[in-house]
Image (cartoon, rainbow, N blue to C red; front, side, top):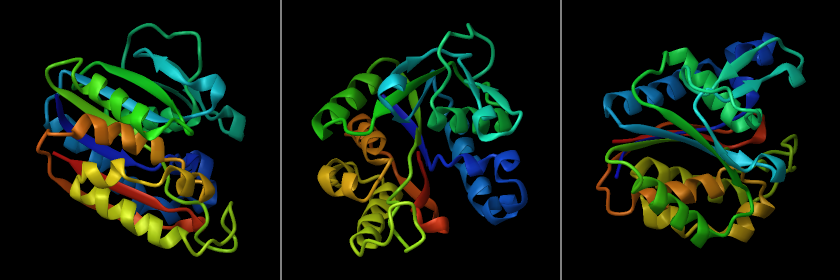
Amino acid sequence: MLVAAAVCPCPPLLVPEVAAGAAPELDALRAACLDAVAVLAAARPDRLVVLGPAGPADRGTYPQGAPGSFRGLGVDVDVRLGQGGPAGERELPQSLAVAAWLLQRTGWAAAPVEGLGVGEELEAERCLASGRELAGAAGRVAFLVMGDGSACRTVKAPGYLDERAEPFDAGAARALGAADTAALAALDVELAHGLKVAGRAPWQVLAGAGEGAGLRGQLLYEDAPYGVGYFVAGWS
């Protein structure tokens, strides 16, 4: 059963060494993410599932202790998914590496951790079914869900300006902040793809896990720096 969830965006710029001189610009976002992770620890889960968008080669599960790195971005920063455990052979996808960094910053030791890389094009029904299965796999399950909103909020955004982006993000933020699983399940898959929404599939996995759990949500952060929608929410 899902007992808590934290929703965070997954730009590598959350890692100060990656952001370098621009790091202070995201201080408020980092603080909100750490507050959301604290919600998970307070719920005393038996298991923490960390999920985020992943490309074709990075989908699937990652064990506790799986390694990640930001060396490809030119910084000497390595992470592991949770403490101890086997290292595994595959490196974490970027979204899960950012999650691992957040967990390390909070000294996570509240429960065993496992990761799941979710294909960004995964159909809504399969996302919901996956969430239900994950939530039923242990007595008290918490989720750390990584994913960005639209990448089309300004002309300088990665996907350029699209007038549909702001309304989509506003609806997603409301749903995440209210722990509204029905609204998350109803997100338009094709529109999300067109707006380069990296978080759509992970959010819909969360929607499946949260069905009937009776959780309440709180939106801790909402903004679009660099033209990309970033939201932080805690469910408890």
